Image (cartoon, rainbow, N blue to C red; front, side):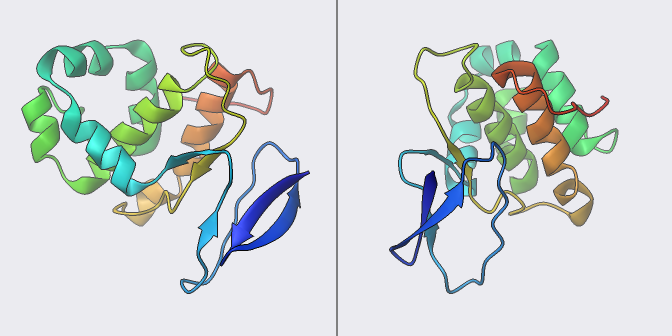
Length: 154
């Protein structure tokens, strides 16, 4: 049985592989023993990339697929790491989110993280992109974590 903490109080939430928690702003939610992926970590990740790292990531088919799922045809992938650093927070947030979810998948690490906590994943995003977050996460779960829920079309 999985547990979350709401204002420090433990709550059992079951063992479903994908859980969405919607809560009031005055409730602090934490997920013990999980990788925290929030706008603070994702933007820091995007801003830390140099040109060699960014070229390797941004030209890869997985990143291109996931970026397109999140932004569809509305947004071009930044060409250089400096272009990424100069991009709006929504682009940097999704970019960092993709990188963190891919890097921590069983395909790319021996580190077995049992839970990932996507905290306020809609931060900095236009409602058009907000509604695509679940498709993005489902695709990554399908492709890299071996989950069999239906992957969205790209």
